[in-house]
Amino acid sequence: MQTQAQNEQQHDIDKRYLSVHLNGRAYGIAVNYVKEIIAYTRLTRLPMTPAYIRGILNLRGSIIPIIDLGLRLNVGESNTSENSCIVITEVMASAQQKTTLGILVDDVNDVLLFEPEQLETAPPFGNDIPQTFIQYVVQMPKSFLTVLAVEQVLSVSELALPPA
Image 1: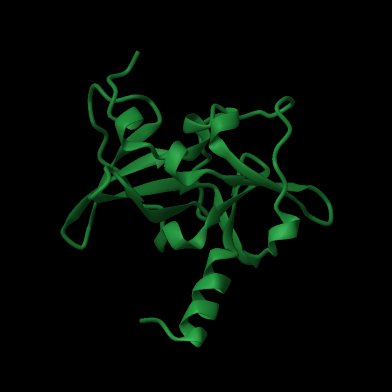
Image 2 (image 1 turned 90 degrees about the vertical axis):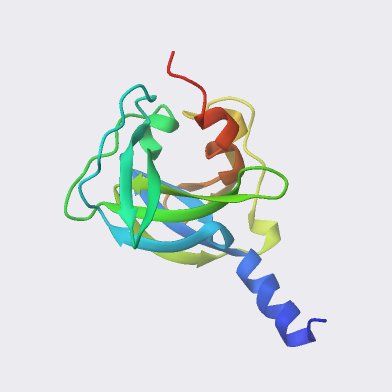
C-alpha cells in the first residue's frame, strides 16, 4: 500500500513532461514513458521497414528499434547533429507486455511541470501532425508545446505494419 507521500510523488510525476525539439517545434513527452536519454549514435538500418524506423541500436545488450519522430509525425526527417538525442521509452505492446523503443529527436530541452488546467485539448484542425498523436497542447510564453500521445505515436501494432 502506498503512503500519502508516495501518492503525491506519483501525482507530480504524472504532471511532468520532457520537452524535446524537432524541426524547430517543441513537443512534450510524459516522463512516465521515459527510461533514459542517450546521445545520438550510429544506427544499424533494417531492410524492409518503414522510413520512420531509422534502425536499431544495441543498448547494454538489448536491441532497441529507433523511431525518427519527425518522419513518424510527418513533419520531416529529424536533423542529426551533435545535439541529437535518442529518448529511450517504454510503452505497452499488448495488455500484458511492455516494449522498449527509442525516439530520435533534434535535442532535449527540459523537464516541465504542468498543472491539469494548463493542458488543453488541441483544436481538430490546423495541426501539422495527425490528431490522434496529440494528447494536449500547452501555451508557453512564446509558442505552444504539443504534448504527444505516446501510446499512439509508438503503437507497436501500427509500427509493425509492412512499409507501403
